[in-house]
Image (cartoon, rainbow over all chains, first blue to last red; front, side):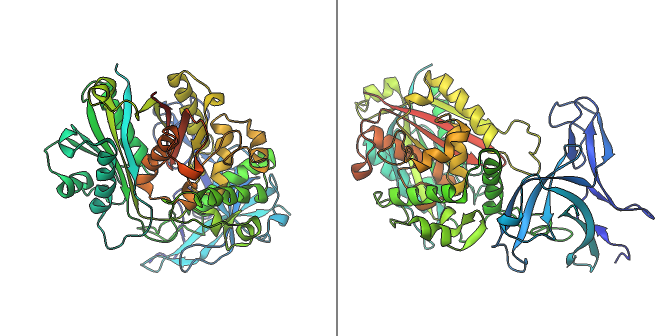
Length: 138
Length: 381
C-alpha cells in the first residue's frame, strides 16, 4: 500500500514536492491537445509529434447533466460536466460546490480545476486516490 | 452493379423472453422474413447476423441450428447499436457486389434491465460519479444540453419527443408498450439524468428482426418484385475527429456525414423523404438528428416538435413505430427493425399508423463509439 495517494486517472500527475496537475498530449503538427498518451495524433495522423503539456486549471462549462440514477453505491445527485479548459482542451468531470439544479448552472460559467481525495474510494489494496473536480470560480 | 431489394422483412413483437436463447429469438424473425417472401432457408446463399451481447458466441451459426444448417457462409456482426444495420449493410454489399443473389440479414438481442454504460473499473477505483458519468442517459443528456446551449432547446421540447413516440406506439401492435404518456407525466417521471426522465429513456427489451435481400434479376425471376423495397442508399460512417471526442461521444458529425453521403448515393435530398425512423435512444437524442439529417435547420429542431411536423400526419413523421423510446431497443435488432417499419409503410401495409402515400423513407441508427448507419428505401413499383 502506498503512503501517497495515487492518481485517479493517468492524465493526473502528482509530482513529488509540487502541486498536482493535469497533463495533455499536444501534437506538434496540428496543435491539437488530447487527454491520454499516444504516439499518433487522432486528428491529423502525424506520428511521433506528441509531447506532454501541463493543462490550465481554469476553464468554462460547455455542457452537463445532473445525474440522479447511477449504479449501486454511487452517491447521487451529482453534476457530470464537460469543461473547455482555457487552452481549448475538453475534459469531463464532476462539477462540485454548486446546487444540482439547472437554475444554478449556466453554460460558459467559469470554473477552476481543484484537486481532492477521490470521494473516499480505495482500491482492493487499500490505496487512496487523488482526483480532480470542477468548481465555480469565486 | 446490380440494385439490391428487400423482398422479405419482419420483426417479432418486442418484449422480454428470458426463457428463450438468443439464437431462438433470432430464429423467429428469420423464419418470419422468409415467410414474408415465401422463400426457404435453402434459398439463402449467406447469413449476416447482428448481435452485441454474445458477440463472441457464433449466434448466426447457432441460429441456423434452429432453422436449417445448409452450410452457407455466416458472418457475425457487432457494431454497438448500429449492429443490426451493419449486418443488413454487409448483406446488401454482398448482393451489390454480385457475390450472391439472395441473402439473409438478422438482428437479435436479449437485454437485461437497468443502466447501460459507465461500468466498473478492472483496476484502480470506479470512475463513475467521480469523473462525471459514463451512463448512457447522462451521455445523451450532455449531448442534448449541448443542443440547448446552442439553440435554446428546452426540457419541455425534449419531453415532447417522448409524448409523440409513445403516442405513435399505441398504433403499433409490435411495440413493447402501447401507452399514452401525457407531457406532465413525462416531465414529472423519475429524473434519471437531467433532462432525461425515465419516460425519456429507451426501453431495454428482447427482440429480433430480419430481412431477405435479393438482386433485381433474382427478385424478378422469383416473382417478388411487386412487394420489393429498393435500397437506394446504404451508408456507414464512423465519427470523424472532433475537438471534444474523447470526453463527449459525438453522435452528430457521423450522422451528418452519413446523411450527406446517403442523399448523394440515392440522388435525392431530405425534402424527398416521406418518413424517418431514427435513433431516439433518449428523447434528447431525437431532436439532434432533425438537423443532422437535414429535415430542418438545427435551430428549428425544437419548433419541429412544438408544431407537430414530425408527428404522424405532420410534414415528415419521425418514429411512427413508437421508436426506441416505446417500441423498445434490443440493441442488435434495432437497425433491422427500423428497416422493417419503413418498408411496411412503403408497402402501404402499416394499418392505422400508415404514413399516407409514403414512397421514400430513411432509417438511421447510432452505435456509440461511434457508428452511424443510414438507409434510404423506396417502393419498387
